[in-house]
Image 1: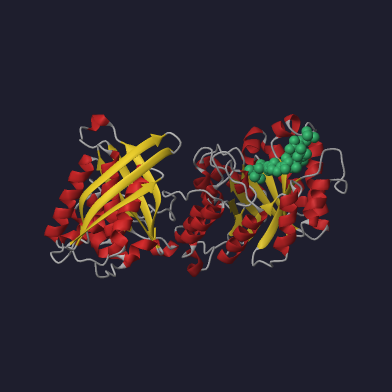
Image 2: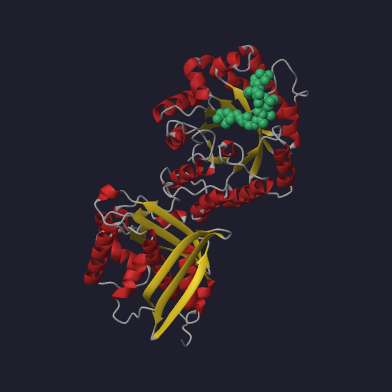
Length: 524
Ligand SMILES: CC(=O)SCCNC(=O)CCNC(=O)[C@H](O)C(C)(C)COP(=O)(O)OP(=O)(O)OC[C@H]1O[C@@H](n2cnc3c(N)ncnc32)[C@H](O)[C@@H]1OP(=O)(O)O
Ligand SMILES: CC(=O)C(=O)O
């Protein structure tokens, strides 16, 4: 079986995505993680582009990472020398063992973009590759627009590859730059190139404009490519590059190419989420293999089958890539969802109890609640089934006002009366809004008895106005995220009145906190 080399370009092509702007520290952090993970090549940036990339290379080289670092740049200018080309000199100054040179394949680009002759473009490619080889670099030649160029003028496209190969390029990477090709076109053209250039080491680099970048990359490997370029999570220009995370899992688990040590594959999910965190983008919950929902089961029929055997609705064991199976609870659930969720929480729920929770969920979702994200609210339902469970507090009254007063601006104030055991606690608090005031007053009422609640804080508050046409009494849904210690949780409330919807989610959160963090009740 041919060895397949993984070439990551998150730090160069990935950074060409709108919304991504990486500091030198971000790039170093990602490079370190990618290298530890086992990427074979890491393309780190374009040193001739900006001082930040040049600074990065100086620092990255000192890290001695266990991956081959590559600096990216283009072929020399038309009608000039390599020695006079600042871009090529910057690539040498980057000091990386590998250099990736992008050159033009498509005759249309040669005439319209480079404004030069086909012969001069061949010379630009050959001279630039030879110049880099003469300076001891491994040269990866990226043939930009290879597939479009091949369709337009196959002989010229092949001539550009030969120019790079004859000048000593170590790799010829066929780029699907505009991302519009389909897998069978990729496969046929790559196979044709492999047959015309026997012995050449080919790679593929795909973009996702037709939604086929991963499939196209795999088609490239099937037809002879031994290097596959892509980015973590498919970040990249326009709609993105080929997602290397999905590609490498498919190569390893579906196509029999051992691209990574098996224990490294287990880190795939954390790598994918880590990079999302560093580039400051929300990780896509629906990302294949590594998304939060990649192994989440919602349909009752699916979950019932999963309980008998997980592979009935899963293409792989999620543990192989470090992800987890989950059951999502909603109005589409059956008893199985409830039992699976209870089992995950270490709770024992029999058929009859599961049925009661299920009926409650279906009823409340009809009222406007949604329990998919509010797992804490579901867990509370389980605890409340237990005849020994003691409600830690009981609401007697609350009162909330919001006023805009001359000279004092906006004021929100809440009073809460709750019963804890036999003691009635009455507290008032101000807040920057009514929900904040209500949350503070409730917390104040409870902390004397339950000091653990002092460490609990509200971290997010989401409101959704539900369509009145849904035929439900409720039209406001509130989801509240809380944090206490290392734990985070979400609860839900719904009501026609936003304050009452919030109250329900707030009081559930405090009750849940006492279960999770331990009530440590002090004498009231
Ligand atoms: C397919 C890809 O993703 S390639 C990578 C694209 N990424 C980037 O462009 C990000 C980094 N780029 C940059 O920082 C800047 O564009 C630079 C520093 C590289 C160049 O900046 P500038 O000198 O201002 O040129 P500009 O950005 O306008 O680029 C156009 C020039 O590049 C030339 N060019 C484009 N591709 C190539 C190539 N493969 N070989 C040689 N020259 C090329 C064009 O002919 C044009 O030259 P002209 O101005 O003489 O007509
Ligand atoms: C090289 C490159 O990024 C491309 O052709 O898409």
